[in-house]
Image 1 (cartoon, rainbow, N blue to C red):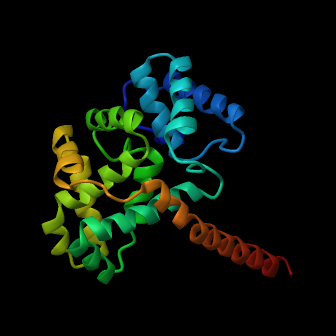
Image 2: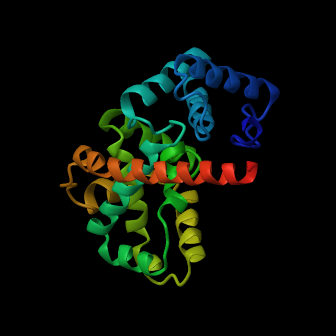
Length: 234
């Protein structure tokens, strides 16, 4: 994944940059073998390297993020924490943007098509770096619920366009075009914290509510995979 992390960057996309990023990621995999390495962490660690300047500082900031800020099991083998966040986000979208939610449901659009990358890369692969860093400022201060605020804000900002979308591909194009051109972080933050109104939902309670369904779904997937492997080997 190293060469695919911010390709074309004058330092990161060099042998020196790749080696530095590899050391941070390998170092953390030794610190937490349960997480090891998960796709998405390369973008997070890379941006931390650019901001913190030293590998040691980037390493410890990565540790703080994974161990104190983000939800548990977000980067586990089955990504259960990420799946929980997507379910919570879907419920919040239904409450905060009911018209958009209903329209996307009619199109059979799955929020995971965009939200997986957002929650694993912490928007570092989707938003311009200046905007991402403003989001991270709030993330470190407010906690992981901020990622849900930002995700909701992106859909809210393009509510009218999304309601006119006729296909899943249209939705993805609208969302990606929006995130890639969000150069003004204030535009996003104002929607996330002012225009969306008070987030009355107890996020921690909602996560616990979603966990059993997520674990059951992941267990079912694993059973199907094991059954398929047995059939192939028999």
